[in-house]
Image (cartoon, rainbow, N blue to C red; front, side, top):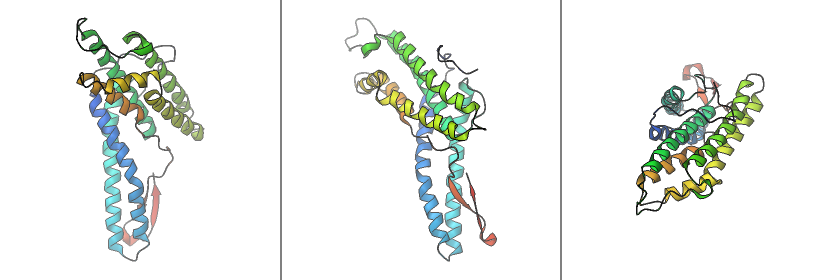
Length: 241
């Protein structure tokens, strides 16, 4: 059951948010290298050298398989922990779901940190700003996540009949996630938390949330990742996403 914008998402089951962020970063880097492999294939096919074609093809196929493994590991962690169903339509959707789970998990950790701080601690308190405390911060961030999630989930429900609308919803969702992580009251909290050298646990937590909210996996679900080259004896090529 998907959350509605009027209710907070359920507390997430324990998960390794650090591992999820690492998979997100890895997948982002792998996606960034796809054009390089595509260009290498194009150059190889422009030369009368079957060996060069085969080498470029092998490297490209290895890269795509590696991406698939990373995405598979990420999906296994996220789908088992969130409440948005077992089917994932695209890498973009997977990235949104993963980022959402990291934020929810780290908000729970933040609550534990806030509750564990002694009242007479010599360290400055948490930089709540206009939130005033953990309860209001959690409520506001949950509401924003719900609003973003609801929008692209509506797009997902009509994806098969209106793919352009679904792509637009995904792009809008990523833009809103980045705004939450870079240009909001919550972003200010995260920025201040990342600069608290006296509190490493808070630094790590805020860095993970910031990374999750600003990761760039908003690729077009219809984008062809690469030209797939058939074995040389077939003397042809086909495109595959």
